[in-house]
Length: 120
Image (cartoon, rainbow, N blue to C red; front, side):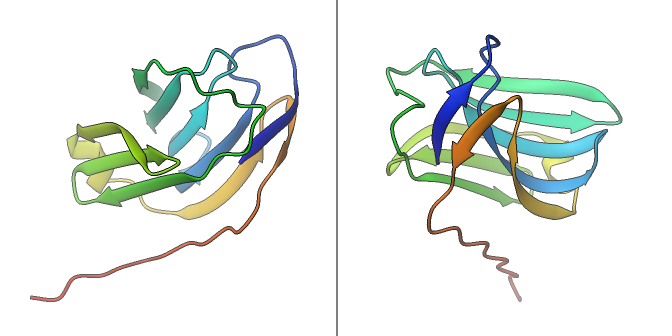
C-alpha cells in the first residue's frame, strides 16, 4: 500500500478495510501521514481506535497485513507487528474486505484476502 496524493487531513490516506458490514460497522487499518499505524473498529457508528507511533512514510510502498481471529486483531507493516489488541466486537463484525482511498490517491499491489476457518 502506498499513498500517492493526500489531502490535508492526517487520515486522508489509503485504508485496508476488513470485515466491513456498512458505514457504521467495520474494521480498517491505515498508515497516517505522520507515520502512525492505526487500527479502527466502528460498531453501531461508535469508533474505537488503536494507534502506534512509527517513523513509517505512507508515501513509500509498504506491505500491510491485518489479521482478525476471534476477539484478537493484529496489524503488521513490512513484517513488523505494530498493533495486537483484543476486543469483544472484533468477533461481532463480519463483512467484506476492500481497499479505500479517503480523499487521497493510493496504490495497492499484490492484494490477497485469506479466510481461514478453524475446525475442532
